[in-house]
Figure 1: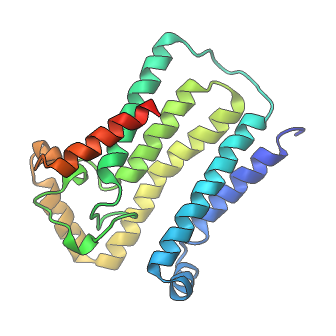
Figure 2: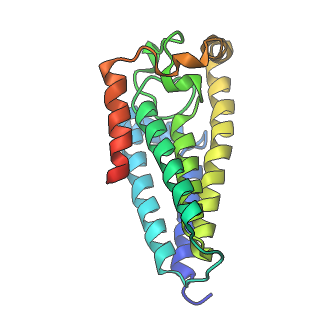
Amino acid sequence: MQGWTEFIGAMAVFFLSHAVPVRPPVKPWLVRHLGARGFSLIYSILSLMILIWLIVAAGRAPYVPLWDFGVAVRHATLMLMLIACLVLALGIARPNPFSFGGARNDRFDPTQPGILRLTRHPLLLALALWGGAHLLANGDLAHVLLFAPLAGFAVLGGKMITRRKRRVMGAKYDRLWAETRALPISRLLWPLSSKVILRLLVGGGSMAV
């Protein structure tokens, strides 16, 4: 256990911070005292800070190699990261009544769903792809223990959010989702407005950072 204490502690704090504040008895109390916007802002900042700590703690943990990082893995990692950045750019801060992180959800138009034609949880899909890419690129025990649960957490989190949103919205949730899924996949980037192009440029350009 020598050298693993910080990593284990950071991992425990990460999962607790994502499980406890969103529980039915806790979240309404926090929203009542912080406001919906205050809760989202504080929760986002706190989650980001804990994630950064977790990544740093993984780098400090003992190095136990599991596989080599070859050329093929490098190309796969870059491709997954590009897709993750594009999905994130297309999904963040846009109307999305199906998941978390949506903005102006009352303005959602199922005839122009954008990235929601592909997935109802674009931010979680981006996190899963990001975790998978880094899992390939870092073949040591600490980073496998870090990125594999993060990718799995994103996949399972989507299922949990779907159940919670469906319970809150009732029949409206399934009606909106059915209208969204009825469109052809070509509507993914339609209409190709200046805002969509800017999001694609930002997503692609973030790979260079």
